[in-house]
Length: 288
Image: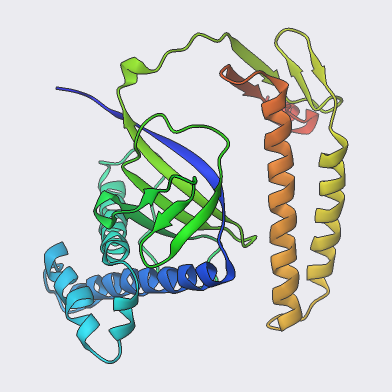
């Protein structure tokens, strides 16, 4: 039996204003189908009825819903996006029940909740059935959205099995490609490098190399602090507070990107990084 592992490759997307509108519509349709599936489960539980199957939900919430005036706009997006939203809801309930029964290891999962347009992360997934592709010019062709510009930072190892389009809280778009590969084909030829995140220096490598805190990271942290202060002065529920929230999200993203970029430059590409964080004296003393 051939065993495969899944690798993810993430790249930045730059959709046009028209493509952003189409993506917003797709995010909204997927969110609506997901919420309808969660609501169907809740209704069945309240009425002591068996949970509806995936095929039944697909017919009711997608096929038949498209023919109604209230849900006719579901036909304006790819059907695969809607089907994947149903699968996400089904997987969320499975993870929840496996968690409370002990079948799923790790922290306990909460019950699936309804999604809103204010969620920090919005996403839609296209499988091979959606017939998405990468054009000769290097753009990502998505059904009913168009050819989206991609900032490629590396080559894909093989043809991806799916792609997930993500919009984060800072309003940025990303494409996450999933690739199925043989684990035996993954070679590890580079040496391991340990990184100690210190208080005096940004990082100290296992070979003794000291990395000072980059200036752009300190500047990003100062802007983040000012954005946090500006948000605290805005009235709750106001449009200005919503604008300040988006500015704060972008500031958080810049700090996170700066930190990842500095860490990546601390060791050559391909090396295994082992990170150790400093422990404050107060925390170290209290553990005795």
